Image (cartoon, rainbow, N blue to C red; front, side):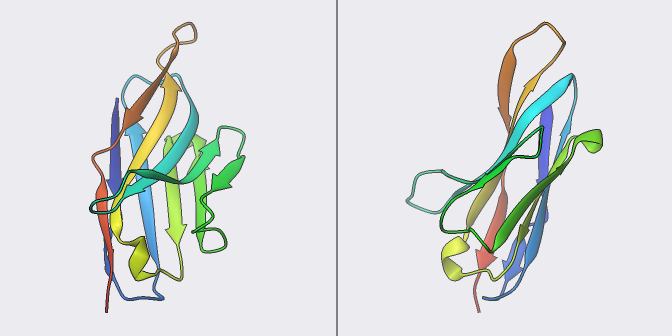
Length: 120
């Protein structure tokens, strides 16, 4: 299984970016997908998560500014980031909790990360 993130880059404060995370490989079902971030010198933290049913949760620091969504048919999750702040600067990682077949257990996979830099 591979998770490939895209959409990161450099943006000015107040700007927007949309991240994508595409999962591929031996996948039966993806139960949940999430976006995490890690800034230099800090621990990795959850930014937003979404279940197969569409239930979402967000870190308090991004509520009202970020929106997570997913396309189950494409095994892809998105993170729309608006009103970006310098403190949003970090490497953003995608993860997915999934099963390979109808009878196997659940496994968690991570992407390689994409850099988001918010600076003027």
